[in-house]
Image (cartoon, rainbow, N blue to C red; front, side):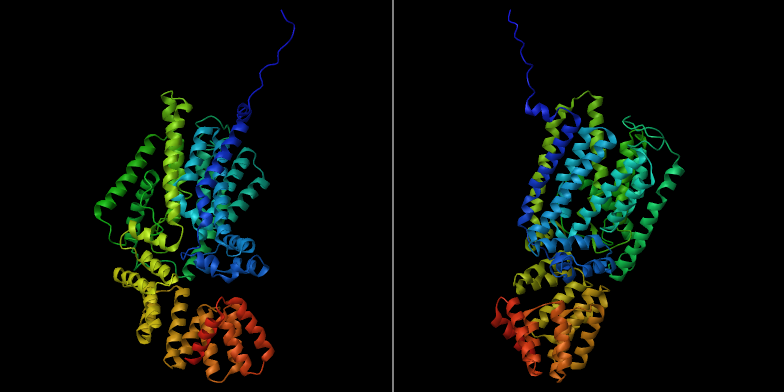
Amino acid sequence: MSGRVTDPPRPTAGANLFASPQKRNLVFGLLLVVATLALYNPVSRHAFLNYDDDRYVTENLHVRAGLHWETVQWAFTTFDQANWHPLTWLSHALDCQLFHLNPAGHHYTNVLLHACNVLLLFFLLRRSTGLTGPSLMVAALFALHPVNVESVAWVAERKNLLSMFFFLLALGAYGNYARKPSVARYLAIALCFALGLMAKPQVITFPFVLLLWDYWPLGRMFGASISGFQKLPVKPISWLILEKLPLMALSVVSAIVTVRAQTAGGAVGSVEEYPFSSRLENAAVAYARYVGKAFWPSKLSAMYPHPVNSLATWQILAAFLFLLAVTVLIIIFRRKRYLVVGWLWFLGTLVPMIGLVQVGSQAMADRYAYLPFVGLFIMICWGFADWAAGRHISQITLIVPSLAVLLALAVVSHRTIGYWNDDLTLWSHALDVTHRNVFAEDSMGGALVNAGRIEEAIGYFRNAVEINPRDPLGHFNIGAYEQQHGQLQNAIEQYQTVLVLTSDSGLRSRALGNAGSAYRHMGDAIQAKQNYEEALRLSPDQGMSLIGLGLLAQKSGDLPEAISQYSHAVSVQPSAEGYLLLVNALKQSGRGGEAQAAIEEAKRLSQNFEQAQQNADELLAQ
């Protein structure tokens, strides 16, 4: 018998990876991130869209300037786009600082934020419940579900991703506080929550979510959690509510600021346009449709038009009965606390976006489901895990059906991501999957105008007005078409209709500016000046109206005033034509040196200097 002792077999690299729960969780987290990045990689080749990307980035001079003190001041004081979300503005400004107007960088920031949210959600659920399988599946559904494509593939929806990021950080900080309360830990919660509100006020329901989290999985309400993983001290409900009062105060302040911003921007629909009864009916149907899209995500659209009073009675009754039936079932099975929490999470976090206060013209929106769907995913994944455990089905057996579901969702998401590639693709798809969609008609027309296909575009604008004669954007676009074709009086009538139909200060300013130009072409300098000045009162940096006032001043012989208006125009909206008009006024004033500098700026900005010069000459000749 040999005396040589043999070494025990060494564990393989794969075994080392899964040697401990911590390592397994890190591997799962890495897989989630890789899957997310792989799915959304195509967005790096997508363009900016005419769906708010222009207002948030490409045509927003404050954002395009990058991160400067002036940008910070503006971000914290503006109600631009009918919102107060300074953190979102600063995020876009940072992207412009880093990537300028290369859309790839802006898109990939969204992807990275979504990947961070996926990772945070997984580790938050895993730490709070002690269960890896359901936590992993919830995070995977969140990562790959097609409904979340809108939030990730749309640059202007950065606010959704940012607010969710800080919401999850705040929820994680709350777990730390619940385990070992302290002032510093509570302040960490408040700070993360405040940052979330400064990204997008959709997270206003956070204190309500914390009460749900106390019920399950933390078990601070009515005893320990069902899983038995957490054994935290039980607190009276009165104490738990009192504990949330400072956070509720933040919610109240955010609500007040948001209402002021949306009212100032003309984004809140009137009771005449959207009666409360129709809002309530649409809310019920929308809740049911959201649940349907969670399980069968088909016909996803960038815009779902509000039905106002066109919903069928059977649809309304079916939606109310469905919601009531699910709620009754949740009450019957209330011992499974995750069902109560998941359902109330879904219902509660959707309240700010469900349309009882109508903002915009949509009936619902995929982006609104980004946070609420987590509640449904919790119900599905924990319910499925409970069902499997009751039948002694091993977790290994569940891997194949789980992967099949995730693969199917990824395939649909990949196709949905493709629809967000460019304006024409996005809006043609929206028109294919929705009915009587005024917003999509207007947006498709705008996309065709941007592509130089103006004669095709007018058909979509006329469709929009035919569907809804009170559509201000449709009338504005028809007016612009008439003006371009020399029908100036018809154009002015369309712009006057816009002023009657909308309280949106931006659209009103553009209509007034265009009307001013039409009057100027007609030789009515008094009306032209009045319209330009009113347009600038609404939007002080509107370049077209500044140019218009400069042209009027130059024609009347007031060269100092013309130079002042042109200089202001090129400072806020630099263009070759603007600089060439400035050149002309400077030369007439004998300021040749300044004129030469302006010519150099015009050449730097212009891709076709001769065409720019011709455009400027035509403006002067009118």
